[in-house]
Length: 387
Image 1 (spheres, rainbow, N blue to C red):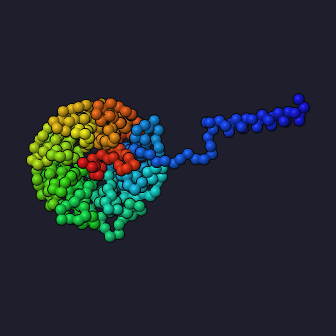
Image 2: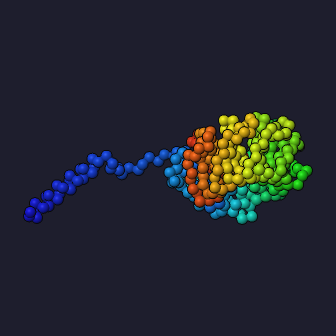
Image 3: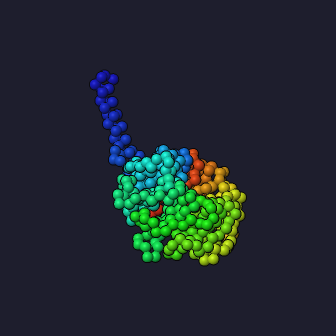
């Protein structure tokens, strides 16, 4: 074949090859794929990384991961398409929920760890750091100039919560500290009332305010307290046999709370008497969640429990390979929680069957939250749980 004939043969072959490729159904066009934000689960641990994954089928992959400067014990906060992440090193990050990109951050200093989940009310971000509660702009994370931080006088490790106090508008903010003090504050952080129990102790438990009358909270002295929301005076106190670091929830007439004496209790909200209790193999610091008349909670014995809210009978329990301090989050008929075995679990709420296990290489004292696209699924420990 001479040089001219060889040239035309190669040219013809190249034309047919390109035509064949352009007609192939699997050929990828140059246009970018659609950028769609879907339901997302956010979880953190002591490994100083926050993960965003698909809550239904993560396939051992994360959507993004974001490194932080310290251990995370506070459940992240989802607000206005951002995730707020707090660390025990005293830093607060605002991260874009879709891409995991840092928007801004604020340092409170190593002496002001953030252990409780921040909350947003009426466009103000309330953050507990060290012994103080701050009112911040959610965008810039700067202080609201007209609001002075309130110092409770003792380190705050629990999440704040808000609720109406009759005659007080708008909602009050409730905060408890390790100095055995609980306070009710106005939105400008001025004091409404403060209360210190007669018994020595410390508050690690977050306050539960589910109605316009009473607040419920556990204490390291072994008591669960019910105070009147109006002025902080006593309604009743319920004794357990160990520290109460689980945050109570109130469903109907039940106040549900765990204790380091190995029991989960249902206490009558009106009388402060025992309705039922469930014995586990170790302390219960996980805060309960309720779904379809069942109560879900973890124990230091490594089990996640599902019990009937009527009589406390155990419907199922599922064993992990580490203690469970994480409070469960319920979403779409499934239970999500972390274990000190460094795994995040998704179980069927009705029978406890395992749907996925996702390893995040970190021990989880905190809980996952889920952006459902129509809102957020959160645990009771967050201070924003919907009873």
